[in-house]
Image (cartoon, rainbow, N blue to C red):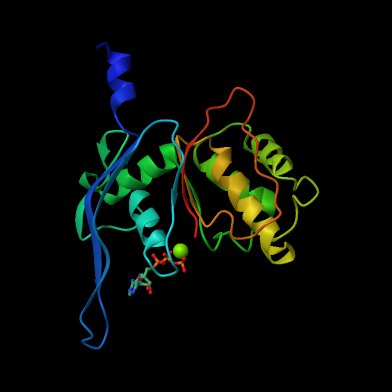
Length: 204
Ligand SMILES: Nc1ncnc2c1ncn2[C@@H]1O[C@H](COP(=O)(O)OP(=O)(O)OP(=O)(O)O)[C@@H](O)[C@H]1O
Ligand SMILES: [Mg+2]
């Protein structure tokens, strides 16, 4: 086996015995949101997490992206133990290889659609952040809404800004929480010559 075979054989996402419990207020005991979850996702795979409302889908995605910490278990992204890293290193790792579309979009209200997509690109040191962000907003059909603030966009349009922001950094892994929650939006097309992310989506 040569080096590239080894790289290909490492799952992009591997989770092992992941559990999350939280202590409820007023002595109501512990809530076990996730218990002993294990699975692996290979390069190029698309996986949907399906479950009833409140079953723990968003909690699981948050753990996989290192936005939350588990009570037990490990998450390895491209072979790296996410919770073996300190918070700063985990945030850096997220910036390098993860795109996240939040269930509530999490757009910054004081920034326009264009600025929301540009911001992470600028933080990552992308030279032509404005041009890249504009292209992605055009790809999701929002070329005529670049200067709109989130409160002046429809729910579906806000979600498309969030999708453009997640895709613009061409992440290796894309987490999308309820990406089909609001219907009717065009799906972003892969950029010419760009890598396809490995999407992990939460869909009811
Ligand atoms: N920090 C917390 N403290 C207490 N309960 C929590 C906490 N975080 C999540 N929960 C509870 O855990 C359960 C799972 O929440 P989660 O948001 O992961 O569900 P979900 O499957 O994404 O639901 P939906 O489909 O409605 O988005 C919910 O019942 C929620 O109330
Ligand atoms: Mg959810």
